[in-house]
Image 1 (cartoon, rainbow, N blue to C red):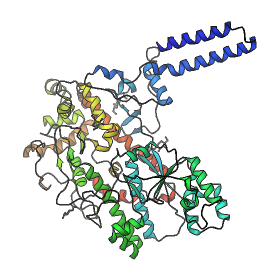
Image 2: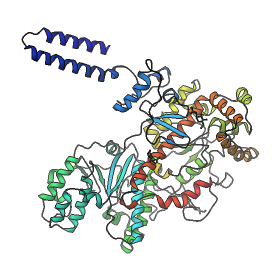
Image 3: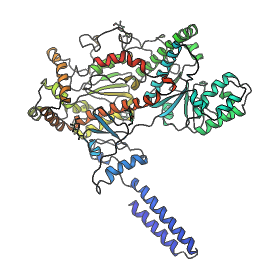
Image 4: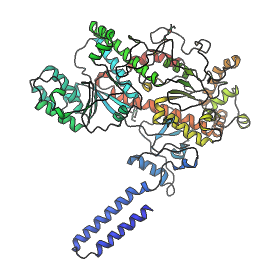
Length: 634
Ligand SMILES: *[C@@H]1O[C@H](CO)[C@@H](O)[C@H](O)[C@H]1NC(C)=O
Ligand SMILES: *[C@@H]1O[C@H](CO)[C@@H](O)[C@H](O)[C@H]1NC(C)=O
Ligand SMILES: *[C@@H]1O[C@H](CO)[C@@H](O)[C@H](O)[C@H]1NC(C)=O
Ligand SMILES: *[C@@H]1O[C@H](CO)[C@@H](O)[C@H](O)[C@H]1NC(C)=O
């Protein structure tokens, strides 16, 4: 309709101009050509928005109300165009391969149009999952001058703090970048700074600014400024968006955090250098003109551990820093990390729900998830156990005698304040465990297996009983991958024998692993008999029968092997099971790909970053120690 209306309008304009004889012929010709080009341009570039291409397919499912998709970027749009709009005229094509979009067996295609029941309807590949587009991460910069000579101990302690800083901001959806003297020196203003007679303090401060000015604007943070609040916190949401009209600083934060566009940073730096507002200024705040900064009063969601704050609120750590800087910084790192952990715990007052939809025979299967929940519910190691982060004086500090609530309910509930850890089995794994048979065959599948039982049990309460797999899978995908879900749940696959290595980066703090972190050896996952008896929650399913529970480890191993098997008989069974359980299979593939993409995204960034700042703040230490040993043995 819109297309026809517009075309009509241009035709009218065209004849109107052609008939106008007040204009000389040459000018008229020019005008006509201009209108023609303009008409073509607007018609073809605005046309698609008039045709619904979004996930309208899902409208057919009554229960599901699709969220309105954001206006896609041009490239994303073209991708969609080639797969959906042009399909009637062209043979279907595989969507283009995206950079770094495979990991082991899983591969994926990220597209804004991701919320479809079955990925293969777009990717045309059973093995390629359709994932939501990766959110662009706004860079946050931190200046760390590696050229300053430091003792080895101090260097290590500072590197550990930088790691804490990077991890916390990464988990909040930012891209933390450590800048060094190299970035400052490539700034054209650097020479000018060298030639000026200024206070050494001013020079040091100016180097940060020159390094920052060299980038394309964004945020400049102290490594002791950390995001300390919910993902949904308005200030963090605003900062994540990355659009800052003014050069902003926060009241009481000093050099803790700035945000601004490049042009205003350049302006402030140039003025501070060439015509300082104050003689003997010690930093850019003093030297820049008074109106250079917009000062924001509220900084909820941000914690700045400035020296004055440490002196006042954490006297033990302050004392330690005075006595021995390296040891003090180590303590400070523990303190900051435990505050991050505690904040996360406070955000989930209802506890952690380790999902267990078919409780009879999946106790062993969810043990890694349960261990993770156990660690998360503990109190981190800290020099000052009863303290709160500087921005959250009313927090409730973690008390070992009152750990977070853990439960293993069968149903998913989207309740705020509850954290979910899901373990998604491949239908073959589920069939093996559920039947307690290590040789499931096609006949059994056809006669006995309940279709898409896992997803059905999981969402029975949340979505009601009468709903098909297509409707369930859509909601499930939202529960795994939408903005809200990624901050309040983590989903694992049952076949992966180890927990992901980088869970710390998912949560934004170093997860305390009792016993192992301190180098003492303990058997990793304690079986239910060794696990301290927790009070049974009303939600928890029945405990497994002793003799059946004994069979589970062997069966799970068998199912994992079957999943990888290339023997024709096994492949036939696997294919039959996948075909029988389309929704369960889709859920499993989706989670596998989502997890893999999260990993690859971080690795790729880690690879880029490790080249700079002499690798300060990188994750090498931890990888070699506790985590590796832990995750490999599960
Ligand atoms: C999907 O992966 C399986 C196992 O890796 C393989 O056997 C199968 O051929 C793949 N399917 C497609 C369509 O590539
Ligand atoms: C869960 O609830 C939040 C808001 O409380 C909402 O944004 C989110 O989309 C919900 N997720 C699902 C899967 O319904
Ligand atoms: C760690 O384990 C030891 C015993 O193995 C126990 O005494 C201690 O309380 C545990 N620490 C935490 C934080 O749970
Ligand atoms: C990403 O892709 C590039 C080029 O294809 C490759 O060199 C790099 O190793 C990949 N990174 C990861 C983490 O897979």
